[in-house]
Image 1: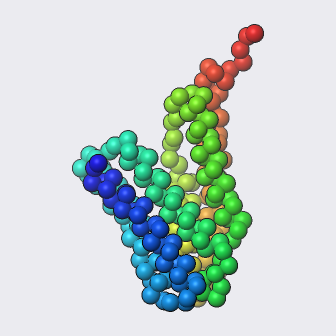
Image 2: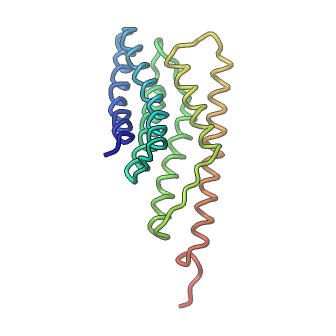
Image 3: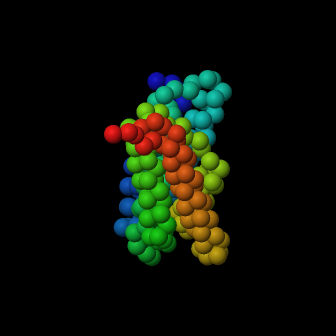
Length: 194
């Protein structure tokens, strides 16, 4: 259990606290709950960079870390997006349902594609793409904008939401193309003789 993995586990433990605090805020309007939830979200997001730095700087790469780190990212973002997809008026704006469906659909497709590729080929080569990283940035900006209740510029929030949708869709398609290419090269997917 490396220090980087311990930081990642702390990130995962912050997620239920974040969710509970935001639910309390929406039910009671207690501003302290919103601030506690936002703080948990921000700390978990910052620790994402910290655990990556620690892993690189101190050569703490591990097989567990390659699973836990992206899992922590997905759990934080998806829990925030699902939570904000409900009607939380008058306290928080609603995350668009079309974008929630796109993000969850893409993530489900990635999980299913990874499973199929692993079962057929035994090995998966996942190349992180810039489009996926940009999609994550746009999603984080949109979630943060809603949580911080920055109502002064609706057009900017719409930009974050549209950017998140565009880059989420494109990154999902690029992953699908990569997997189809990997499956096509594997002997199990070539036509056989009877």
